[in-house]
Picture 1 (cartoon, rainbow, N blue to C red):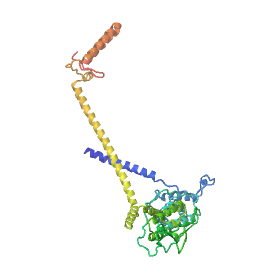
Picture 2: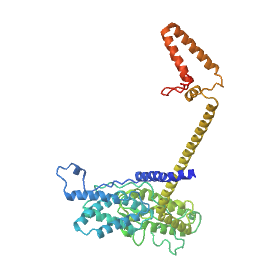
Picture 3: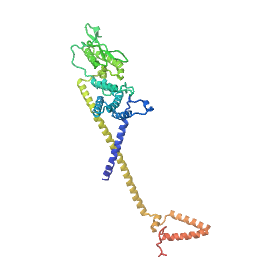
Picture 4: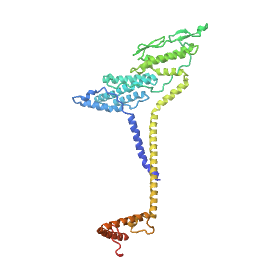
Length: 457
């Protein structure tokens, strides 16, 4: 029962400590990002003239708007756009004054514009090339950023430079290639018919298509891409017409090769050449600040070619993998909350266990000390000391003095006799004092006590 009372007393302390550790760790890991500003400059700190009320109001508003910036990098990039649109709608519906709205919108545009340039757009481009962001969502991001820059009349020079995305945000999924054969698989592509290696040893007219690779107009800053389609070959990389153009090219090329291949190595050879072209020509531009619409799902093409080196997953398994991945992305917020709860539980249990060990140790020490006190009391009761007998006014004569005590008393007498012989006056006074001391001790007298032995005198 006592243990349960102590435990109930310490539980609130454990919870406070665990929550403090948890939130202090989360605050250190989720610091406010520095996105820069285009409203103020560094030289404004050293201005000679005083700041006006409008400038001070804008400064404090910008500082308050900084708390609206997400402090963690979200995995679901489209949620950033939805969050910013909600903030803008709330500001428009809440503030009625035109002057106040302009100041607050300027501060909010500076905050969100800096965040988009530093974090939002680089993450958007990576997710777009991975196949997790649609064309319309990407357009919404860029339109919002253009609105911010237009209102602030800036090119974003005061904002922080874009971050470098060094790894993939999501798990790359392979493409689901069509399994139904086409009646005219090579009708959409320009191809050069070449004889296979087996045709040199036979009289057949079997040929395989030689499909040319796409071409960029510029290796450093590409704007257009030429794809060997018969109906249209030139596409603008920043236009909607080039969306998924590389996927269409790869699917049509694979159909054409699958229809006419003889040895079974034609597809692997084409995959090898196309993968090298993607890595050398397209790969370096995936880290550019420019958004290339024509490079959509390019990372999925690379993953498909990589898995084709072994075996490409079937369509049904690919659908199941895609569904499980999107369900995982949708439940990431729940997983994060569950992680925090698990950390709190683990910390609480750990502190409880440590405090229980500490309580058990203290209790064991107290029990040992109590046992020692009992044993010492028993020992002193059997053999009382000389001091206790003197203070109590009684003297135990049943136990004879030890040899050590007898020798000590002999030495004391010898020293006394010697001192008496050297100093007669001192010996006389000492004899008187010793006589009084013996009388006082025999009667149980002490300093500050009245005499109780008058009748014995």
